[in-house]
Image (cartoon, rainbow, N blue to C red; front, side):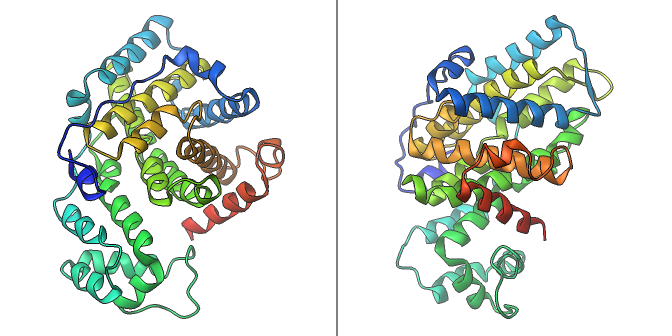
Length: 326
């Protein structure tokens, strides 16, 4: 996957510098206190739910061993990137075509028509509850018209990273991976919906949302080497530290794969938003986690996390995410 996204989105052939990961202990003091406290509460609730069936009171020594292992990978992007699947070769070719803003629906349809699986994916997406067409869409060109250039870009990005959820994994990762991917998809949609109101790029927000949990997948795979019987340390304090370090790892892998620099920066700074893109990602991540917690009946739809923690548009975004599963 290295270099293709950067080149296709207007980057260069040169190495992209790895974003500097802030110390996890500093995050809380450098963000808005109210947003920081809310995000931590949501993250802690999400982690407790994610590990509910496998969480246990692990020793401090074991917790530190897992966190130190993830932290070491933050400084070793080559090894980290090797722990996740690579992108299918077809996607870069199609993304190259999508860089032309003047590309017509007919021309784009011709490019997509080279792969029957992609044709089916595009038509299925255009008929989803998210787009809600008035009449069923049956042709590829009509589907492309419905999705638009950005919609097709987002679909291809999702297909490119989908192998993550199909990895052969053992232990806790086998349970967690589908849930983490579901959260990633919802985070990507939420971040892209929130991006315009924050003057951030819709597509970059989508990419950041899809990519931000890649480090967590790696972390869960690593934890499986230390925890027997598919278990996972269940403490909220450990979970918050793991989520934070994993986000730093995601940013390092994104940079290593030559994602746009601003995407990697948004991921590494989403814990303490300092740019419009990082802010869109932070809010999108929280909305997506709340969607999963509500759907799992961990919290009610009128929980203060929602009624007090989200503004009107974020609550509408929360409702829109419910359509993704239809």
